[in-house]
Image (tube, rainbow over all chains, first blue to last red; front, side, top):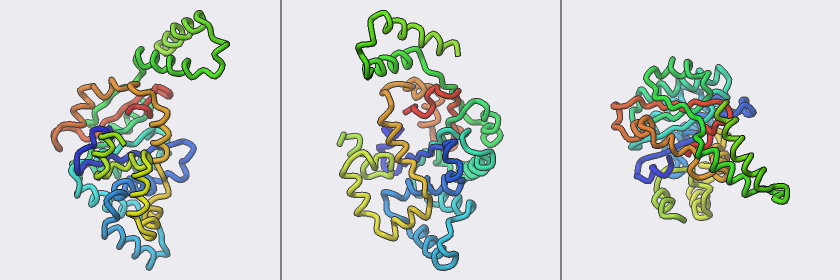
Length: 184
Length: 101
């Protein structure tokens, strides 16, 4: 996707949710990480700098609350032609984080129409996504035969113990693994 | 640096930050001390690091078919307001959702 971002004014921001990092990935932190990527290259906009100085002065440097974060994000997106927001593994956040995140995103895409949101997750959260984005486009992912073959060939090439390999074993791996995966 | 990266340098395409020495230097010189504090204040998360790892680990071409689907193209290319802005790629654990380019 970054390859298509070669136009001026197009930004791609990416986030990963992770079971093992549920503590840190509060929704304000996730939205803050989007902002960080947006402001990173162009220098920090005045309104964010002022917000920081105010927080430092009046609230002992306390982080932004979620509604403020949403407002700042909307403002930052406005100055760009298009912003692609990609969030991987939405299902790996807690139900509360997910609710806050999807609600915030709903508000952002409603107001900032130049936003595109790319989500990945396991099928069981489909209903939840549809509740917030009833018209969401959907692509079911599963590896193609070519994907699996390419990946196996790459892994076999990196084998650290090539002496243990022979033509028969190689042929068996290339036949059986794709079969088993397509049965899944 | 590839022509693609050169083209992206002037943009806010922050995924490319870790890709070349040049970009890292730019990043450090452009952001002052307070700037660094502000970035930390916005969020302690550093998703670029994970992205860098995923990118390094990815086999080129895997999952590219998903980017050729009409859903993806529509979502990427249509004018604002003519398409739903949300695209959901779903799949079971291990099918490679993270690794779609």
